[in-house]
Length: 378
Image 1 (spheres, rainbow, N blue to C red):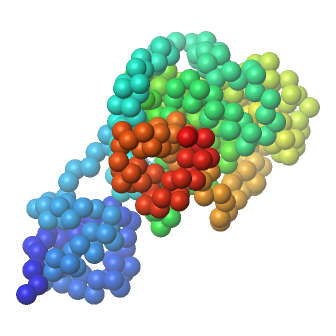
Image 2 (spheres, rainbow, N blue to C red):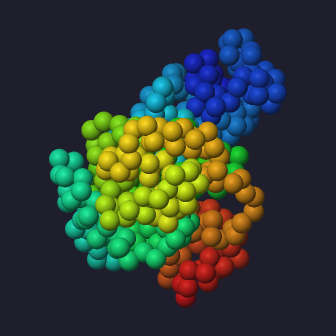
Image 3 (spheres, rainbow, N blue to C red):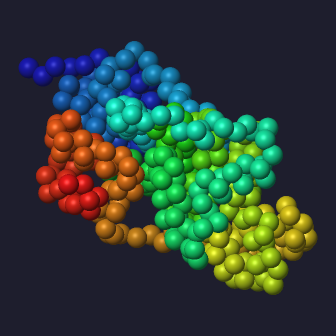
């Protein structure tokens, strides 16, 4: 005899909303959903297990008498013009939770390796002059030594510089390895997770241009310098308020210092600004805002070019791509330091292969071995 499970309408509705699943979509898979919601019938245990999988929530959550209050675990500093920031999606919450677990694991690993608190963490205040802090960012990340001439090369060099100073950098456009759970840059661009031994930056890659990704990387680093975790999103040009405005200012100054602005003096067209901005790994919008702030262009010219840039926004967006190198993608999602630590801990016997496979997101030994080879872990 099948076991029926008592559930409440509010919890079922919460699960659908959290997973961004419509009633119409759900009822195709669960024809009795209407009866469950009305209370006329209760799902069987197996049906509820499938519903839990469908909505990406635990079975335990579905049998609670009322929906849980899922507050963001980090400070919400998102800003966007005309944007109403509602309750966080399940994709966002699950992504933060996933990387907090990675951070906790790496913190213990680093402590076992004898790591000490990274000295730059919490070394500045949001009351400090943004120019001074931007100079500090350039020193720490060796930005004056970067020879990149395109945004993708800048991203590579910024990520390496962050990892070299001890920051975990992880980038993805989906939840975990689930391609059916895309993240949305309308909801967030990235976040920073502060920790003395394992500071972490996550960048949402969902369709974002390399220029936007570079801005997010440095922006989140500014939060860590100030000693804080933060969820960021919205328009970089709006400035925001408080710490978010300060981080935006620091980032713009770090990526486009005063001595770089002369490159834009001859620019007239949208294309001129895009070409010049690419040399510094930023978007044309960020460059225009920086030039206006430095009084290098007047308000009228700024507005004219900005409107033209926004009218052709797709020119700077990442093209939709399928395929790509699986191991490069996997390493980007985990970050090279974490991936290396997982593989080495597993091979050295400090962690079982089952756990190692779980952490990299694959149960295949050949995937693990190839990842180890590419990371040069022997």
